[in-house]
Image (cartoon, rainbow, N blue to C red; front, side):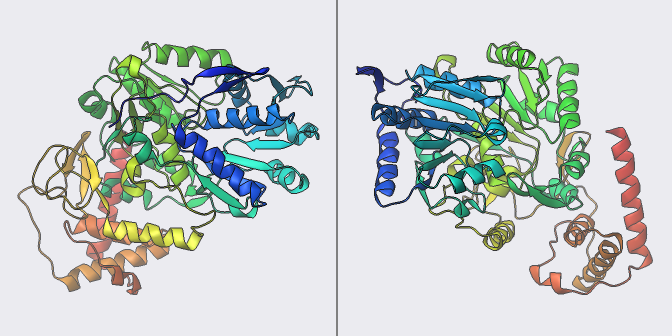
Length: 522
């Protein structure tokens, strides 16, 4: 890994009435690529800059360059609380900044940049004399964004995002300009490497088999209400607190939970174990939020947990451990969460970030080094993305070691982290008992069954799924739970359901009873 760097530590020098700061080569390349696209006649551009590549620095240089030519820039954020953060960032770069945010609105026509919330633009409209618009977090487009882009036909728009994966961006932007990948940024010292650990997916898969999906601002994802009930159970992936005590190395840690109740229960468990933890949410008052964040940065709070507040617009480089407790189908959300722990913090001795995945997201989407920015907008249609998900689940490209749970790409015969031979075999079935991850069926009692016998059970499970309105994928998990070590092949998806025999019905009833008892104990 290269020497740790900080893209926020830039050199400033006078250039007329403005300050000029030196860019790293990859930042200058991004600006040059933007200019080249504009010269080709494209005025609706996405600039994809991964976490740690210096998105704010690049945006400041774009604004400085425009101001030097007498042009004013409108910088649009999608959350009101991000206005102050953007104002501070531009001011540190030596730019004069105005504000367009509700009652707190004050700007001049001579300001280099006007930072505006999209909510205020929707209510009041934007100053029509600006000559360049920068949209922050452009993967989240409100209707007001789209209306502005459609109406201001003569004004160039540049959308800034670290996660340009959302389908539909191509309807509003013409081209994408890509910065370096997370892997490149890590290799060259702009980010710290991630050490990723995860339990096997099976227990999480079983819980998620009953959770519906729907459209969210980040794309298709699990329904929040159902996900909260499914995941707020310790038995699924073991005790989060116990795992952190064993693997977290007393690091400053950010935790991403499903909902507020889930986050609070995690925080309560940490505090009960004598580990200082706090919950932060969108309704937390600004003064209290700033107090909690300051305490976290100073090490007075060891665990800071939230639902979405910490995923975007939050910067605490001292965080060197992440707890992923919220399963997500969204690559964007996964990358946003992972990115919170990858920033360098050389003054604090930070050399890496430890990721403890209790949601299966690492196996679902991959570790940071495996994630690439798309080469074109909307390059993955919903059908392509669904096909990719199916293919990924079938070939399991990422696995976790059966001994230390280190996440790595399938291929090596030994775990790269602990060196144990024969890493986790394909599709192992795992459950958690009393908060500890153990292999189901690893005891002395084994049962053998013919393929026809297993098919009979599988058809019965399909019937039950249809009768109860479950997804048919649940039959796959029931079969793996009943017949340990056997995974129904893909062509079984075409089997027809059959009324379940008495033994199948009794097994399902016993399973529901076990599930209910475990839920009461949790």
